[in-house]
Length: 366
Image 1 (cartoon, rainbow, N blue to C red):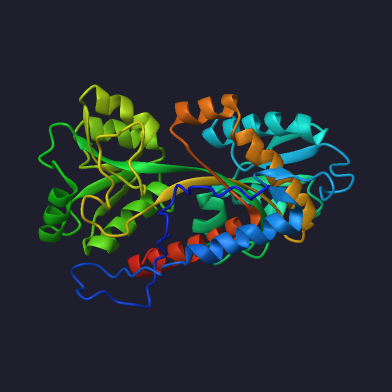
Image 2 (cartoon, helix red, strand yellow):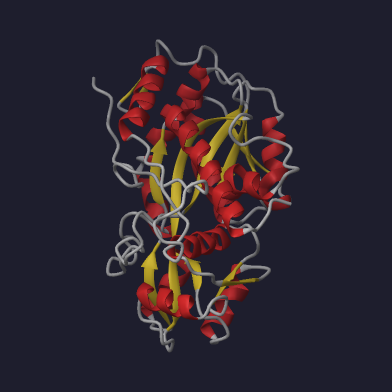
């Protein structure tokens, strides 16, 4: 049976990577260049891991599945307190794969330091597949760009099982705003540096970094206004105290529908099903622009490939279930189901991308 070829949520032939060592033709147009990753090389890596672990059309061959794994309950560490989207996602996936694995998948919340406490716990655990991490953009990419003292390396200290979902953001303004398009924002920001305000849940969050990437891509400098949470930023945007925010699609879509917010562009490579009439920011004129908040499952480095293959096969099947499909649709998540080898390549490029953005924007590291 042939290996199934997935249609990625990312651009079919390109995954943008920020490269701060190159300059564009115009400083005003921004200091971004993209390293275009050959999709065929990624596919080749995916096929290689499929062959090595017996993955065919998303299924694990019993003959090459990890012998005796799992031998005990599997702990899935969520690096945040209970109740958030990462916690809910982990519990949904854990429940779905526990039956096929023949062992309970126990979700354990280990919050702190933007997800890095839980991530470090897993990075230093035994690489036997019994302790996994529900990693996110912050803990497994952006933190490496912002912190010199990060106790782990997101690339070398983990073996990804799969990137499972991604969440694009949407650039929104108050409905009474004078800004009606992405082009309006760019024109204003160029003429009025560091006056166009965008609110975020804090420094280093995906919303903050998405705004920094937007500024670098367009040769503008936005004014970052950090809050203690996205809810506070949203309230100020609705109240007219902020110009904009790169907001969560699920949360902002209701305000867009009621007419309190105006959506200017989504940060994904394709239009989002919740906002089908809203162009991507790339469609709005910023070539190659893409920024996602993503989540995936990671094992400690050195985990046997056959264990990764077994886990990936069950996760891939779970993501195709009606229950998880409905859950993802409700939350606005885009399903990725990226295999181990490709996930490894993806993480390396995400770290490189955000390190470039952080350096060019002069944010850190700290």
